[in-house]
Each structure stands twice: as structure tokens, then as C-alpha cells.
Length: 220
Image (cartoon, rainbow, N blue to C red; front, side, top):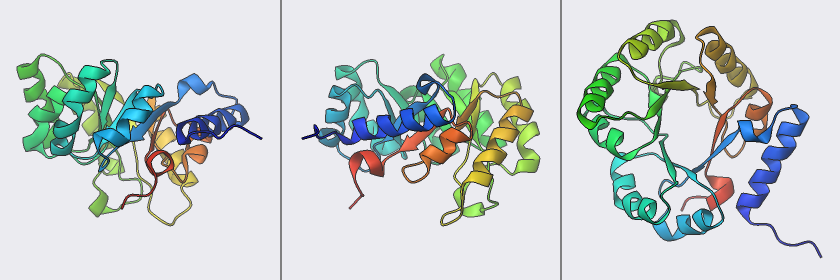
């Protein structure tokens, strides 16, 4: 009988398989385990298994769980993958190592101010509205070069671009578009792909995939 794999082992195997087909090194792909809505006791097994990158949607929820977990597992890298309100920028800069949802000028200003106060700044992905869906947030494609320039001028460390393709739509064209936009703007990172489509995202250049359901199960 084959040894039963944990969800983390299964996802890592899928990443390795997709990378092999795409002729990429699996080390180029960072798995961000999206732990939003899950309690500390559901997160600890993944930490014990060696997972170190985790994603949260809300600053307040992360503040309740992660200081204690990070104390226990200090090498943990915490990613903010949800929308960030400008008035929460200071809290986000203190707690998170990476922010995936920089999408507007007012947030650049708020992060720059928080950076000066804290003496540190998380790496930031600029979220792009590739599907032209206002409700999801994200910078309009036409406004991207100006936002990139503003963030660079403000000293915000840019990791790359992030997108969430429209639901129930073939994601590949949107991943390809984000890859093209990242190249055009000289940015190395592409945060794209979730539980249902991360293998496609890897084929199209993803450097960070945000996986929740495949690791933690469906949210109640």
C-alpha cells in the first residue's frame, strides 16, 4: 500500500510536476498557504511539517493569531493577500513580510508613511485588475506604469504583480497577461494561481501561488 500523503505533500508534488512540464525549477515557486479563517491549531501542523509562507486576508485576524505562532516559528514569512485599507497600513507594515494588494496611489502614500515610522517595509506586489472587475480591487492596466513609478519613487520595495482572474473563466489568458505586464514593467514576481488553477499559473510564470482549500479543506 502507498503511504498516505498529507495535503501539503500532495500540493508540493503537484508543484513539482507542473514545474517539470514547464521546465522550471520548483525552487522558483513559493507556496503561500492561505490560512485566512483558520485557527492557530489548524495552522500548526503545516508549520511542523515545514511550511513557512502563509497568507492572511485581514490585518485584524492576523494580529490575533500570528504573533504567538511567529514566536514559536520565527522563520515564518507572513503574506497579506487580501485588500488593505489605507488606515490599516501601519499595522500591516508591522506584522506582514509581504503585501500582495498594493493597488492605488493613496495606499502607496500610506505605506511610505508607515515605512518611515517603522523603519521597515514589506515587499509589495501590485494587484492588477486583469479582468476589469471593480469589486475585486486592483489597479487598472492603463494606470499600472504610473503606479509602479510612484511606488519606486516612494521607496516601496516591489516584488512583482498579483492578479485574481474572473471566477468561472479560463484563467490562462489572464495569467499570460500578468506575466506580460510584469515583463514590461521590469518586475520579477508574479503572484497568481490558487487551489483550482495553480498548475496553469506555474506553466505561465507564477513565482508565488496562493493555496488555501487544497491545504486546509473547504471553509465552513
